[in-house]
Amino acid sequence: MQDVENLKHLVDYGVIALLIVMSFIAVFFFIERIIFYKRIDVKSYKTKKSLDVALTKHLTIIGTIASNAPYIGLLGTVLAIMLTFMTMGSGEDIDASKIMESLALALKATAVGLVVAIISMVLYNILSRFAEVLESQYETTEV
Image (tube, rainbow, N blue to C red):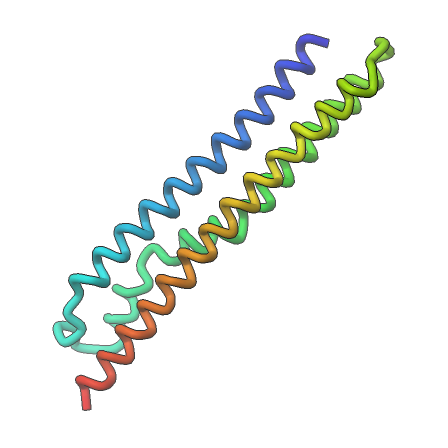
């Protein structure tokens, strides 16, 4: 019984910690890109393709975090629910309030995953728009 409780805490805190690290990475790359976009001189690039490569650097990481964070949160929820069912099936007398508490705590991983995904998607969209505007500036200076 104590092993299952330890596993439950490991799953809860491990998944939440992973999601927090992912959110820090997304915010770090967002700040790095904003600083880069503010300082860039689009006229210094010889081709639009080289400008595009420079502008979209690290955007894939932010997009990947945005698309995978809900799945990681859901994985944490599923694992925590499985552990709750293992506790219920152990044959010990367990009250309904303890079960509901365990299930509610399991759902927090999904909630955190959704929050990380939403924030990352917003950051990704802001950066994508910045990149589009800078590419348009490049095209207008080219003519």
